Image 1 (cartoon, helix red, strand yellow):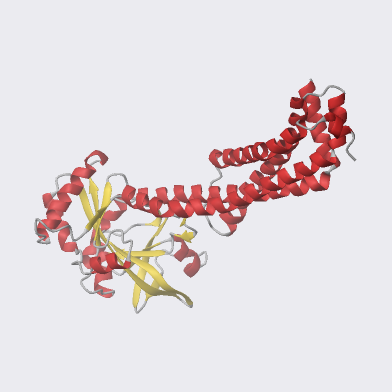
Image 2 (image 1 turned 90 degrees about the horizontal axis):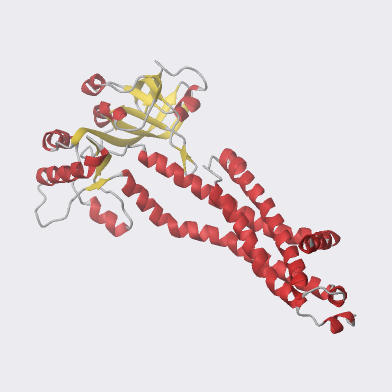
Length: 407
């Protein structure tokens, strides 16, 4: 019962000094709010990245000219490589028995227009017709590109949801004609919404047959990326080795020379992004953590002031039989209560800011998880204990005779 009484005394002391206690808890709440919001955003982005890059499929990988570039010198070196072209599709299909299918995609930009509505620099991809089965992409309306479209270089387009919303304003886009630069295209299909990555929408795209893109939006050498699907996830590494052999042979790469191309799996891309963002994540979490430490120092200072103000009270309690452990427990309770209440408010605010303000208003993916909530409570508990121990020990060590005579 005595520990319950001490807890009640601690709550009463906090209530008596409401303004001071509120300001103390406010500092803790602000720090925890920042940590929870940032952790929620980081975790949400992590899951979004995993979803985007794994949409290629566990048994799918990419052959590209540049791969992952981390410096200007590396870019300059890879820029001198020969471009990858669609002529490699046939030999890869013939020389890779672990490959199930091989497709290709090219990239361009164009100004889009429908009636009086314009969009500048829209992202365009040229696809072979088999990419639908190789990527995690669903058709919401109409159809995807066909082999006939590719063979005839048809001026047809498969568009994302952002294009529908900005150009067609709620009307059915199927069968409508849009202008891409100086060329007219007929809308044949609409993709299901993909979502955002790092706050940037992934739905502002126009897909067309690769042969059409290379014919109308010509690029020097018509470079492409190859999308290759292994017969199974278990044989993907074998398929990558076989593709490497075929590409080196067809590109006449000498035995002693390194590859003049890159083979990338979704895991490799995701791992690279994780590596380069790891330091950034640590920094953005460390900054609000610093404010929490400052809040803990404020708690300690306030508790030291409280010990000084209540020196005579401590003397009275000791004179009627209170032990050192009772005195230290009461002040430690006060520190913990203020810290945990501030942390609890900070968790609620952090989740609210992360989910409703950043997630919905700024289109930043957020996902407040148990890890973030546990981290918030853990930080509050540790700060309350760490910065409350010294004031509690100082109060417990006061000499009762001197404390009673304190003015």
